[in-house]
Amino acid sequence: MASISGNQQSMRQSDSDELFVCPYDPVHRISAKRYVGHIMKCKKNHPGADKDVCSFNARHIVPKPELQMHMSSCPDRTMFEFEINKGNFTTEI
Ligand SMILES: [Zn+2]
Ligand SMILES: [Zn+2]
Image (cartoon, rainbow, N blue to C red; front, side):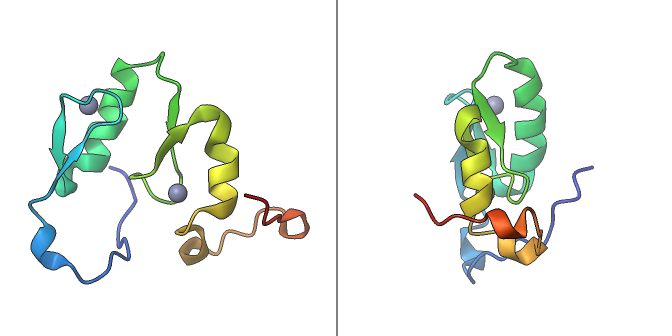
């Protein structure tokens, strides 16, 4: 359902079995294939979690207060050529 596809991962195809730890519940281990779907579902189960998902890459889970900052410096934002506030771009870390 999520329209996130074509993540430009480096050519490490052999790591497809790698399991990721769920940011909402560390007990959950999710395969890369199911990660996005799981995050969306798990997010609903943890409404109190102070975390949010990056719009550019669902694998980026950042604390809510930092989401905006992350989005402005997300390494994946360029592939979307998302021109948010062109003139308002800061390189502040
Ligand atoms: Zn989970
Ligand atoms: Zn990101």
